[in-house]
Image (cartoon, rainbow, N blue to C red):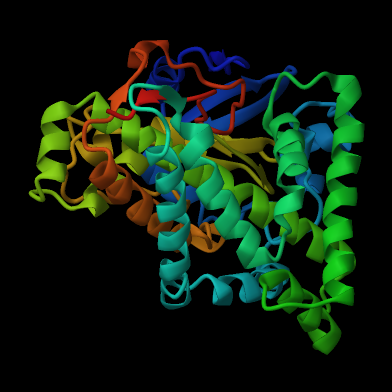
Length: 402
């Protein structure tokens, strides 16, 4: 099996995803830093592995980890070993840690946040409307970033004053270019910041999910301080990064497919289709780290060996022709059915999927209603991905509002 090295600079994500798909449903890959693992790259096999009890989240199953081959200053260590939370455990422990979060993020409860999301969106658009006409802006920084960050922070009870520091630390957390000597301090700083937030909520609880997690631990659900801190960090990280990329990628897709944009803005195609097709075709999450095989697992005509690590390459499997037909590589807002798994599948499916869909479902139509003549200020081919192998994340999105 030929090993495919993932590009730490993410200079050609589509080409890399195509090579992974061509390698078969199970590809042997090398992560930045020289760490070896396997990637599932086809839709059907991904669904199979994401529900296979032989593929677990316990890093101690990883043979390379047991042998001490994974350094603590590896740039991706925070994603491979983020501490104990619902992301890193299975079975009863996973259900215990996930229950409160899942209850807070049901479709019905998330819908109650609509009015607040609409108000935040309107305020952002009002600020953009006040800018001089013809001025080029970074739509990611000015619109796509503030909305999900403010929404998830309000849900979790995080003060807006902490946003700049969170942004700085998360930039380092996700990047493959963070110098190894800075990784341990960055991880310590993230832990300290979220510990500070949890301590403040313990002293002054509010109507937020962090306070609910603390209360549950005191009422007998046995969440440890470490589990509360790590859960908070996980939700804040996942709760804004994915939605930022979803909004940005949807705008780029619409701007580069003018006939489909015309259909959407004319009401012929619902915005829900835009969101689902963007999630499939240009998924916000390119690769998800990391699971481990407790025994040999057959994947098509290949085998994921016992003790090896597995990543899920959503960028590759989202364009799998076996699932989506010969037009899998095309952006098509009329695609039906569109049964993608961009938010995962099985027990660890993303609990924030409904919230992300709602935010994009409010933000995108409001943006185009206010600025129907919006134009990209640079060719799509010149837009650059950040050096983040897990996130399909642009540096910026220069536009002219028209």
